[in-house]
Length: 208
Image (cartoon, rainbow, N blue to C red):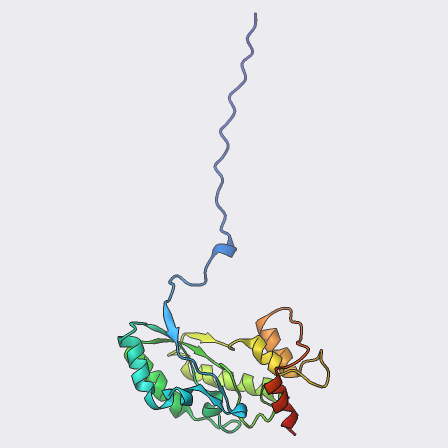
């Protein structure tokens, strides 16, 4: 009787792990931090730096954040209407002092280019036809000035909220050019709102 021998099969080659870009992080360190609320809408007389007296005690606030809370990373924003009170005219001293103080204290900033609000010379705020160009020019000047000091920037806080506020009331399903620009910076798809909040709508009706 013949015995058939099956030749041994080679062991399967070990699978080589391929990098999955979905699991890769753009940073190597998780940064714990905090932030100081800084919403400022001069068209609506909203200024949280004044309401909280941060403009008066900003040095103390920054020092306490570093010394008492022990944080090293701070999300912060400076009001656009203060930094550029007139189109193309900048008040950098306001920013220079605070950014230098943060650097002295060892606070690494995550700086919002714009948190909320625009200068009054944009008559219709975020819905003004000049808003996209004005924002671009402001951003270029701002970031270029502090590029060697600030390494982390938030380009635009809650962009869809500002896009909503830039809506065109004449047609419930249209948004202004400013809103389109903001949406393109934030998401690939956006469905315009059909109505604005009642307070903002009332304010818009009063504008010329």
